[in-house]
Length: 282
Image 1 (cartoon, helix red, strand yellow):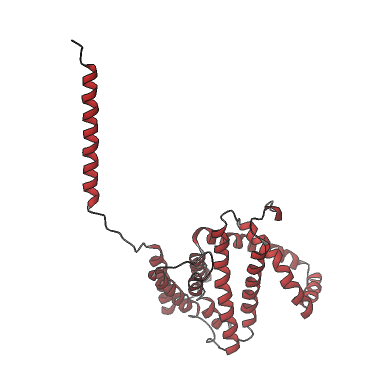
Image 2 (cartoon, one colour):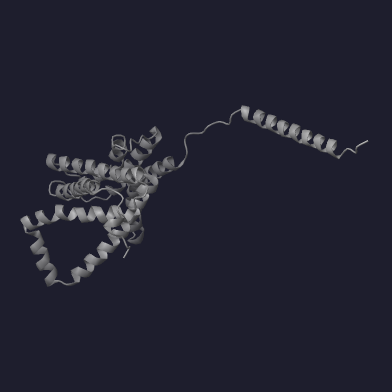
């Protein structure tokens, strides 16, 4: 429907092979870690995503992005605030397993690579469109997904289950459309503002989603919720407020005066030349 075809590609296929491999690793490790970690523990780790994204940006070829110190503080406040807010009403305490911790740490590394690789694609080739990145990484991702699904038998089980419950097809189509809109939005943010800012936005979005759920379903807010929201707000404000204030140079007014004086001298000179031309001949 967008009218995109592979003939319009401006990046080589190998770029999207790398991106798809990282994307596959991120989702696979994240989902697999739930077999060893409970949900609160996974939330704690995933909430820290913005920090490895900022660190990894300094090592990506073609990007080499460095961030000022106050942005690291802003990200840290955002992370701590989100962890406090999400775990405020957790029914169970975080449960840690060494295998699960290793898997979720691997997922965080993959997440940081993915965001920075996407930013590097847009930075190194400004003609790249969001549709191209989404289309090509999805098409290349199919060979990564289909063989494991066939070997584990998941593909045939899913096919049979969908045939028995046809409404699932409608759910899948709706989910695909919603995912498409979300992915295009995230890629647009990465192209315009960068991977780290996008990670901060998606992290803050989680807090907004949770807050809306509390407002809609009238859940009680505790002191821990308030502390988490306060830290999140502080992190966002610190990110938005410019820190580098440069004082006005004292030489500027002097330069301005000399410039006006020079203009006045030139104007007087032109006026004098005009008077000489208009003077009557004797």
